[in-house]
Image (tube, rainbow, N blue to C red; front, side, top):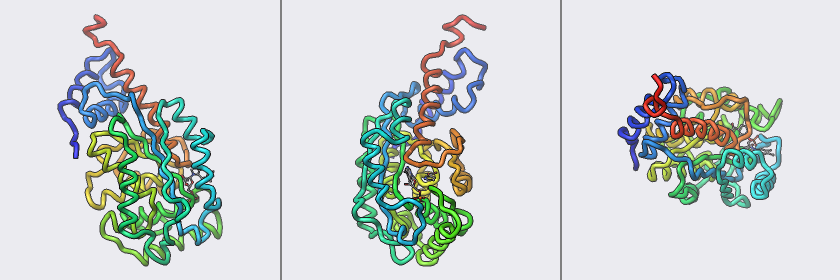
Length: 317
Ligand SMILES: Cc1cc2ncn([C@H]3O[C@H](COP(=O)(O)O)[C@@H](O)[C@H]3O)c2cc1C
Ligand SMILES: O=C(O)c1cccnc1
């Protein structure tokens, strides 16, 4: 497991303080560069190869009629990612990220967590492995996203399982649930929480699913081993990531939070994770779209860090 390189981070901070600007005037942009420096182990961090990975999966809990869109949309969106028609394709293009799409057995949804465990221990391990192997060792930064109809229900169950609280705290509209559908969603989460009380990360993933959540966990762990920083996306991505904190409170130390989603549970989740979102744009899409938007902020921060003149170079002051 790679740890934060304090010497590289301090060197980056010293450089920031030598650049032609009042000290600290680039605010959190300076902190982001220092963060990248520490995790990459380089005083001059790089964003030459940024990899965005979307994991896709299907969920048995959609049998509870908790989602406005049919399950078939998951595979259709995977196709859309591949042909370049989704929001994430457009953002990756302008943010200079390479997009990888990893569908996980879409024809074999996980089981309905209101009735049984969504996955076996072996299925969890397989999905985590798929996540780990999706991470390229030569990436300078990884952006994580997901696609899976029913995922806002799965995320609510995961968040409630990790942090406590009930359906009212964590269930939101997702892609647009209202009225009776919202009631069924709350009930599904309540039933799941009553049925399963997992104690560790792997059991939590097995209880509620899904494959893409397990893959996100596998990718985060692998990125840590390789010393690659990560940008998390919205409610669904963060709920998956939060599972890792069950086994290691420090598991997300190499992760930045791309944005705060408009999905109501995300505010609570952000507070529980004690992370500061880079952006807050009322986005509520998923697909890694908030993480990819945040990459553009990081690119601005890094361009200042690597391109600005120092006071000595410019003969100022
Ligand atoms: C066309 C379309 C594109 C999407 N892109 C991301 N999601 C998002 O919506 C899903 C979660 O919402 P729910 O729990 O309500 O099903 C996830 O797949 C998420 O990535 C989409 C959803 C749709 C319909
Ligand atoms: O914040 C998210 O991840 C999100 C919110 C609604 C729908 N899909 C994803």
